[in-house]
Length: 352
Image (cartoon, rainbow, N blue to C red; front, side, top):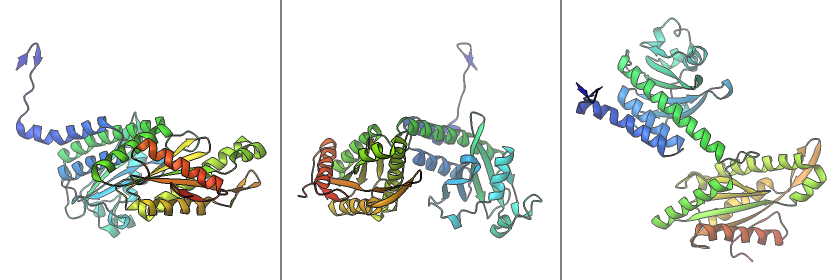
């Protein structure tokens, strides 16, 4: 039927119902750069629509294979030993740029001699490459170890539609991070940190929770720049940034927090961390751990040995401040308490 010179498309309710989850994913992508949540939505939709048992999103950074996400159809995240992913299948996709569809993987001539396929007794596999502007950046991997011929033309078509959405999400997240990232240290910049801090504090106000902020300053950084040169100073900043990020990721309290810690470069030789859900004891624990990891450590730079130390200050919402800006200011004041106390130490707001 034509209307106004164009064909009028009629979509029945059943078809619209199948399209709606994909449209929801598209809207989610346009809302923001929360890559992990978007990939979870995409992968869960693929598992549901294809009746696959397991699925994974894998990227190919610098030719390597990295599993970004692996989930079971029940919605649980899969540990490494539970994923059932054949590296050989992924390498075949990476090498050819073509999808792999298997009905009985352990019996197919190209895979039946592969140890991982035989050990896992893999049956139905669908692995679709993820392309971004003609460059392959990863793969969408689905499998069903219990059924043969699980993936037909319908399942393949849906998977390919979803890989296109995954590519857009990955690119959006990359561009967002690039525009909000400190170029030298690759941590978040202060503008991103401020947005994150405001959001976390607003959430804590609504829920009655707590938020910790930690400020870090490299002791006597000007002497390092003046005595060893700016390139040495840059290497020190990169080392400090990497250590801060690794230490915070390794803290038990961060793993239990209602949201991820955010580590950023405030500017110059100062860094900042927001710790959702952290009270006074947790913030002091993190602050002291950072001093321990970086204090009085020797760092080799261009054949020279530098001795590092940091001063740290912390504050907690709502114990020390009622707003995000005041919280950051209180942490900064505590930082200078550490400086005046002799450096290479940590203090919380209110410490003498």
